[in-house]
Image (cartoon, one colour):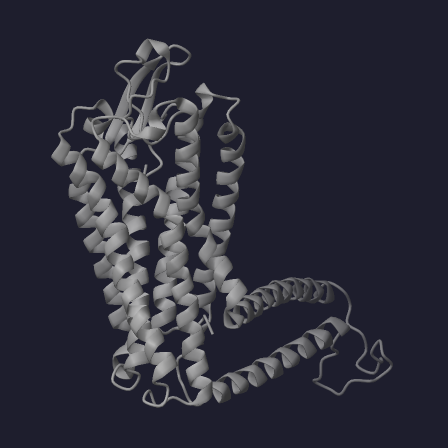
Length: 426
């Protein structure tokens, strides 16, 4: 499991009986120290991260794909980021939490499969941030030249597909040694762990292999993509503040582009902060191998360091939807509007079922004379239908909803001054 699990490679001994030959790097079992603060906090923290991450990223995905006017390049990339975060939360956090407390219960094949998917999602997340930065760069620095390219959404979809393929192939080679590792403990007998590298776990890997394993993640999943991302934003922000006139943007469009750029930049900064400790830990372990790093000298320190570093990584996958909600009026509006439509349709379905029941009831009872009056005292015309109060209220809700949507669409189009693409982050 990515970063969570278990490169059992230190001189920290789980018990005195295995002090000389057991090495633990990523995931020391919390069940061996039930009184440690991490044993009490981590299960609840990981459960919260999973719930918030799943609901938040699902909300982003559903909002983007259900609202037609959000189908543009920036929002497609945001959807790709939400998909990577969603898969990461589902595939990584629950299994890591379980491995903290129990021996790995699944097969070796499932272990290898889950590790590969976790690394793939981590790489896909950070390189999607690069694509978002490039999209913002083109929109801000070359707004006219890039308009036709950015309007062709199939290019963005193709780019996302290529990204997933490349990170899959890359990790196929890096994670060729993933598998199941076993060691003995006095309290629990044989302990099985799903590890990123079996040879590193047993301490049999050579120095070059360990450096390649750790530093490949440091470089290609952190330093390189973030360097590219922050460089693009540096150029963009300079152009936004210094050369507004040259960009040939109206005041409203300029504010919109600046706001979107700032939100995406904040997402990138949060990613860098959340993943910093884990990458620093990987870097130090690569330099120290085969010796233990300083935090691996005792079990309590190891548990504290790994718990904090991994919790920061996992929290990143549930923070992005929160950032969209806090900073984006557009996201809040579209999400609330979509929820209202879903509630309305559920109510409509209930009304239809009630109407079908009324029709069946009318068919099973004798018909009234056509000269009888309706319940409200008004005689309907021939061929007309008496409408109940529920139907009248429903029609009123539909009319009000249509009027509100028309008004909102008019305001959005007017504020964008003819711009066809409306970013979710506005």
